[in-house]
Amino acid sequence: MNCNKIQKLLSSYIDKEIDTKSTIEIEKHLLICNDCKNEYDILMKTKELLHSLTNIDLPSDFYENVQREISKRAKPVPSVQLLLDWFSIRKREVLVLGLALILFFAIFLIRNLQLSQKENISMDRLFLSHLTSVRNEPLCLNCNNVTFIISSLKQQEDSSRFILVDNQETDDDEISE
Amino acid sequence: MVFFVICIIDAGRNKLLESMEIEEIIHKFGKRVFNIAYRFTGNYTDAQDLAQEAFVKVITAIRNGKCNTNLPMESYLYRIIKNIYIDAMRRKPKIQVVSIDEILPQTEKERIEFIQGSLPDPETLLEKKILEDNIQRALKQIRFEFRMPVILADIEGFSYKEISKILNCRIGTIRSRIYRGRKILAKILSSMEDIKNEL
Image (cartoon, rainbow over all chains, first blue to last red; front, side, top):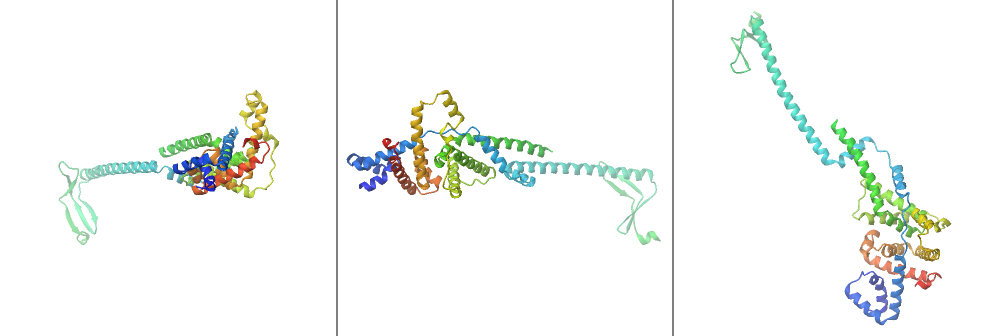
C-alpha cells in the first residue's frame, strides 16, 4: 500500500475498524514512514481531544419539561377511540373476557330454559287438575277447525304428561248441527 | 360492571406505567442524548431544546404506536436528534447570539461544585474551558455530514456499524466521513492559538 492509501485507512485503524491484514500492513508502514506517522499522531490526538470533552449534566428540570410538553401536545382523544385503542392493546384480555361472557350467558340461557320448561309443566298440571276437578262437563277445544271434546283427563303414571281420555273428534259442521 | 372496574383499574395502571416509562427513558438516555445535542448545537439552550424535542417525539411515537423502527432506543433517539437538528438548521437564521451566561456553570450540580470549590482550581478550569470551547467551535465549523459521525465515533464511542444505522448510511461512507471530518477538525484546531500545542 502507498502512503495515500495508508493515510485514508489511518482513521479506521485508530478506531480498530479494519481487518487484521491491513492492520499489520499499516503498523509496518508507520514504522518506516514519518509523514504517515505524523498524520497518524494528529488524527489520534484529535480523537483524544474530542474524547476528553467533559460530559454535561442534564438540566434538573428536564424531565418535568418533557412531561409538560408531552401533555401539552397530547390531542384529546374521543372516548370511542380510547375504547378501541384499549381493545387493540388488550386483545388477549378482551378475548378471554368475551369468551367468559358468552359462556356465562349460555349457562344463564340454558338454566332459564330448563326453569321455564319446569314451570310450563307445572302450569299445565295445575290447569288440567283444575279442569278435571272443577269442571265436570266435557270441554270443547277448537284447533284448526277441528273441535276436540274432552270429557275427562287422566295423568299418566310416573309421568308429568297428561293424555286425553274418552275424547271425541267432530267436525265443526256436526257441532253446529 | 366487572368489565368497567377492570377498565378503570387498567387505565390507572397504564397511566402509571407510561409515566414510569418516560422517567426511565430519560434516566437511561437523557444525559447522553443531551451531550450529543450539546455537541451538535454548541450551546446549552439549543441543546436543551433539541434533546427535549427528541424525547417528546420518541415518547409520543411510542405511545401512539407509531414507533416503527428496528433500531435500539438509543440509536433511534440519535436519529431523531439528527433529523430535528437538520430541520432546525434549515429554518434558523445563520447568525446566532450566544449568551455570556453559558460560560458560567450551567447545571445545579456544577453551580454547587463551583460554590463549594470542589471543582479544580480556577486556572485549570479556565484552561479546560478554553480548550473545550475551542474544540466546540471547531466542531461547529465542520460540515454537518462530517460532524455527526465524528461526534458519534469520538465522543460517544459508537462503532462504524452503529453509526451507519443511526445515520442511515453505508459503512464505507461513514468510514470516509470520519476520516475527512477528523482531518478538517485537526486542521481547524491546529490553526487555533490555544490548541496548537495540543496537536
